[in-house]
Image (cartoon, rainbow, N blue to C red; front, top):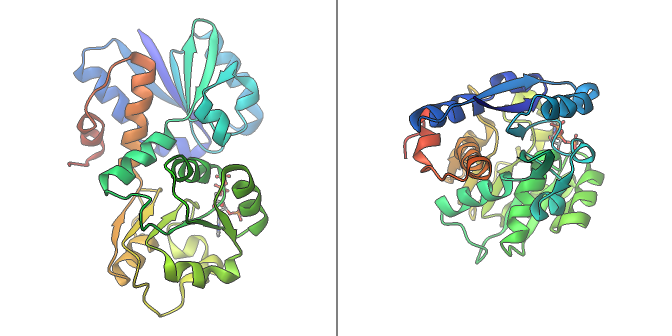
Length: 273
Ligand code: ATR
């Protein structure tokens, strides 16, 4: 049997990746199994040694290890190197190569909603690990108007200096939001109670006339601030489940060479297209 896994901190215990991949393995009669491992930052290097020793066939990497795992790998794909984050490890004999399928997975979500660089004015909230793939995806696709608004302005400046886009100080958010056609939340905040002071950015009563689509890359919240925000501005809302399935499908292809339909990954997590 081949073993695959996802490594992350305590949040990995809520990951839907095992359900998705095991369902696809089962439906295709593949002798493979996918498990989640909770690993703290101090144990990351040992975990990679364990992956090597146990001959794990493929690995997903999630928060907070997507950037810090890089020094422990043998090589990177151009995409992972470009954005400085790894979400997928592919074993090639005894070498471990880091890839990033979040970039393509987010691109699949943009395609689903027929979003194109033409006439798009993008505002990304956040400048953490998850922001890299989203910002990288926009830059790769030739979007020219991409603003990054983060609680810690300095991190926004650093990220946009590396990847592209324009960092906006949170106090100037209103002006960028007024022009936005597309708003993406890449912070870990999806409920007001998770970041009340940051959410004051959105306390302005004025409607955002240009806003068409709001994407929260998180999922699984009982109440979602971004969903209400989209509703209040007559915009469409989508959470991170489709992107999760899309990146999983791309990782599966890297590991196995097989290309199951996206529905095979959506069905196990309750999303029907
Ligand atoms: P990472 O993804 O880099 O591991 P994280 O702690 O999960 O980090 O945070 C991801 C993003 O959510 C960051 O942009 C972070 O903002 P800072 O750079 O200012 O830390 C943002 N974030 C987390 N908690 C937040 C809060 N309460 N209010 C606003 N932004 C928050």
